[in-house]
Image (cartoon, rainbow, N blue to C red; front, side, top):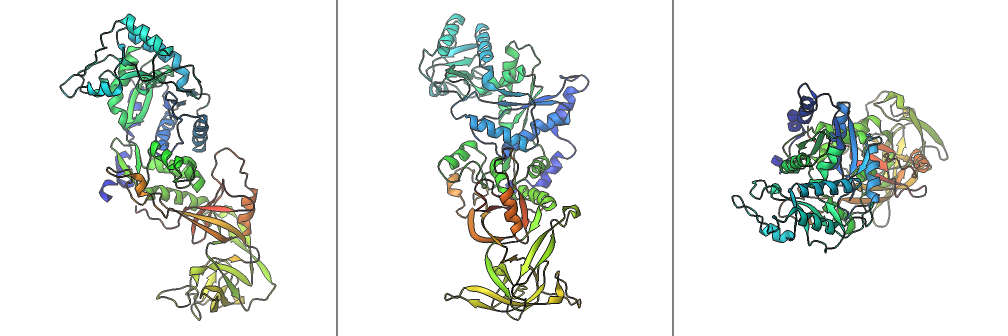
Length: 579
């Protein structure tokens, strides 16, 4: 599997200094180019039948980014010509995700269904030119008659007269025939070595309610017919799409060359889709995960959807950095999920506020600290950003520490708290030395005891002695607040769950989510959680913090309330990606 995963170094070498799409665009708008003197105009055409995922994000950044680079325009067009699973919910979510990433389409929001009338007119034009006909073969029958290499396809309806085809097509539009009984096919080449050119279907009959058109139409254009027409009508110069459409390019060119659109003919350029290990990016499979309850929804933090990644704590900057750094390639490749996490760590390390939280709490009692006394320490918010300031934490006789920061019988090289062991720092407070512990009837440790050095405020001994023990994070018992913390791992335990001869559901990771309750957090975190405006629909990422020594955690903007605070682990501190 390792050999199949293309490293970021490989990708960077391939794309460094040259983006082949940008090279084509520069050629096209340059002197003598097909679009000389014209403004670059691209489009992003998602189908509103689900939520955008990280794979769409690459295409989105290529489309909007190319227009941005050349001072051009990028349209947002909802490809809603297949109404079976399309919905306004997805339309709104797509717009929210694009805005979250920092792109905007201005007043250039279009719907494929807005062109139904014109598309129908162009279909009639093709019939009148003798370039389209109504076929009665079912999909199975046409496939059986599609021929093979060196063997032409056969359709007994290909020689229908123009008049008969015009009549039948109008009756199709009027709803006179059963669903699936007839199609409109382009009359191109039954002997073509490219099977997409062997009289492809242009229209099919569907009796279904459309989310915008209602029941006005019962015939719907196929993508290969509608898409090039929509591009041409919108004045698109460069139709950028994924590699599977490369074999469809001759059909794209055939359509725009044979209908009388009074504009230039767009150029289609293909690029390789984004593949990431330990996940699936098929919208059909993601829908199955949602609809059959394997995840909590499209925005489950384990999902590769943009709303799921956002809820987990991924930032727009990190995702844009990821997509830009993997480059634009012509050859398919699979990128390590670890590199996506690496990009997030880089961003959060620069911007996330540092706080302390204890996920598996055990009480530490500082026996020689005065009872009833409390004091305040200032902790820097981000050591990489001096302008980030500080926030205050309190310290008293009893604090919470992590259970694994104490070991009654230490293993070799253990440098945290242990009876009569090394002196350790309580982060930002004092030096302490463990003296013992208390257990319950089952042998579980419920309290740890220690003494502190009053002359070590801030964590440094007055006499300058060397402290050999670890620095331990903690939370004051008196001011701590309870929280729920959700630890996420890969949704799949197989790096290639989409591989051949595999059922992706068999590759689900049963340990992809661990929920911890009774965690202890600083009151500052609780205050921020209480003040966070969950009604904000701008799609921004909720507040994200570095829990010292534990990782980066994001306030869950869906399940967290003022009375029940929930944090999602965005990514651990340890970087698994090897540069």
